[in-house]
Figure 1 (cartoon, rainbow, N blue to C red):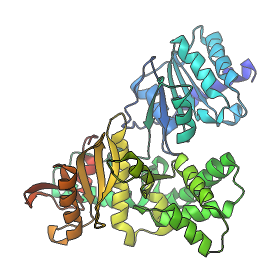
Figure 2 (spheres, rainbow, N blue to C red; figure 1 turned 90 degrees about the vertical axis):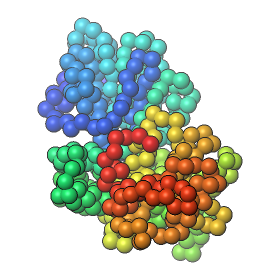
Figure 3 (cartoon, helix red, strand yellow; figure 1 turned 30 degrees about the vertical axis):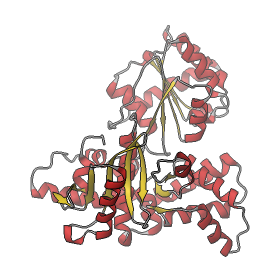
Figure 4 (cartoon, rainbow, N blue to C red; figure 1 turned 60 degrees about the vertical axis):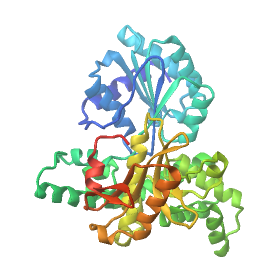
Length: 432
């Protein structure tokens, strides 16, 4: 790209950013010249606005301090890694100094992007922030070319805390009326999810989710992976949506497709599911096991990146409990950022299950059940039994049941169980 066009692009982008109303996210992006900060996550989850927030609110940068490029902008179409370096030099030509902060958005679309980043990183002159909507493309390069040089942060759609803030609602709940309001907003959140565009304008929800599915499935999966069997990838999407918050077996999906007369190999089904995970459409949660091999080979549970995608396709009335569980999983993923904790589920030999086991290494530090009921008497006895048995077998004493609005601490079979309403747990300060 010609230097003049690059300069116009930089100026135009900065003018656009300055004119935006950017609501802050609760994203702890660590900036240091010793590491490249990588923001990865689903499309439309707010990665670009997270960068704008850094520019406008958190760092309050002047135009000469930063360079921002979105490589999916039409002006940057076909850009090469060498043009990233040219862009930095063009900035110096315009402002008389190199940019202190570099923001490179959707960087994975540039072939060989990591070569430019390595060069810029080695200079130690810049704070470098990159974003991408592909987990494996970024993680692959981070694990090889950028090994030891990058800190990754997964940015998901809005948490319930952020959803409340975006709506101008106080998080300080003191009265019964305020609690009822919070639960009303939570029902809305569980239905519509947390994509910022939908949170700010519920009327566009139907159109947004329809277009989002086209964007993720067609652009990020079909086009990027050059998939020809479009019918099959769409069928797998439907199967994953119908089994959210449940165990999701590749073998079972293969058998379902086969019963419908679709000729496809089990390896292809596995690959397609992996592509959807790579695009942050779905997450596959493994079972807790002291054997790493058994954990890897276990049947995963499937969670979707946003509840709104599920309800727009499947409806919500009969799935309220599963929507609550999906929301809890996503919140746990947010709290996992920059920590040593991992998330799994736990299954006992009798088949009973604990929804989530938070572990550090091979040690379970917290066990969590999620239920949509309002009274202790309505909680499924199997769920409590599984929690108590898992507590014994995993030697874990931190037991939590997330309910709709029942709150208490109970000693059951000599073990203390903490019962916390979903709205209150979601509004807690981030952390396990």
